[in-house]
Image 1: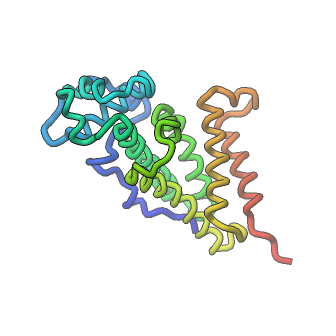
Image 2: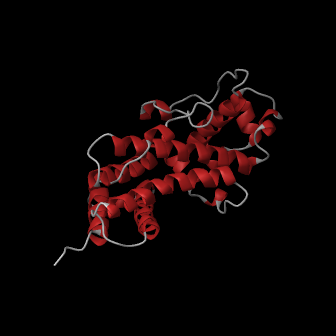
Length: 232
């Protein structure tokens, strides 16, 4: 049965509360300048980085620019981030945690089983389209190779694990056919990621279908391919 421990995915104030729980319009329109409060330096820097990312893309991200936006000294970011790559990784790590929480909430708010899987896949796509700048960073070339970023690697694996473990649970319940759940999960992820990138790049208009319709159709095809073989 597809289910998620939502408590483990809830937003943590020290890591993933960047715009967490805010409506989409508010998330996209947060001002870049903010007051820094003692004890919140890492969070202030990450929020400033997200604001810069959303308005100027990855090119706008630098330790100096983030320090200026957060209202701190140019050396302050080095207390938490060794270099620009570490800063970008921090943004991606927080985004993965928020994505996991969004998927967990969607999975847990209705019927379990295949309907929960559908809700989880739709939540993945919805998160990407509501947070396009962060999504591009999460899967972009700036962070290719995670050997030197163990915390980010764990965050990414955690989100992937939701899908893999959910598929394994559905297999045990007979809702999905036999097969390696990890391979199934990567296939599902690759399909959704392709749809997301086509959508973000404005390439889905040629299909004549809405994002919701495309996700639904793709999910149907995936579930048909992974479905349990009827007993003779």
